[in-house]
Length: 264
Image (cartoon, rainbow, N blue to C red; front, side):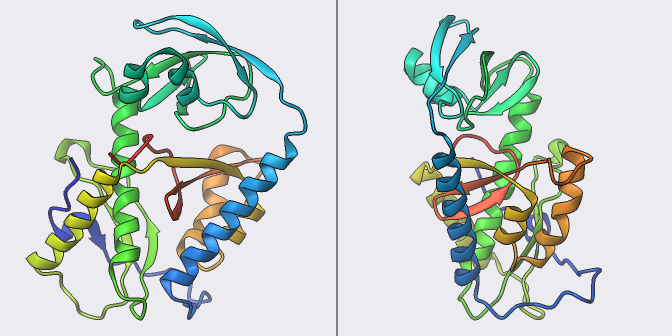
């Protein structure tokens, strides 16, 4: 269950180290609409690149049901595979393991013949599941911070630090541009209510792999995230032009970083 518990665990003041970057004058609604347009356009472009549907063989290894499935390359996802097998797998699976070594989002298309194992939270070892869960919680906090205030209050999202598992806390760094505002208990309660509403809506995450140029276009008005793109790509590949950044859309909000399958 997601709850915003204290200001110190969710809001950090973030000062830019680059004085050459100026704050734009767009509202958060306009910036979010821009990111969504870029996401939707790139998604459509990638779909149109698939000229011919190729088949791949997915060898599913699972205690509930192990079988071989014939799926569509770059279209079918682990979630689609689960739908072919069991409603239990559909409901409980949060991540997948491809070829016994690659952690895979449930909504990420499969790219080749592979083995597939479904991961859930009740397993003995669930470090990757917990990591994705906490990142999803941080993702949701970012959404709440960007959408909770009136449009004349500009909120700049920075990044979400690694979660502190031992304390059960997660965070999102944001520059709120609200002067000396300190959230009251009622303010925090209102933010928490927004999180509960997202949980009840059970929204699904949609992932997309994008190039450096598309990422820079998508986050053109997010100065902190724009500055992070080169570093994030270098972590993936020494060649920035070959690396692909994974971004996620939850309803009407795109972000980056591996997530669980849904908000519920």
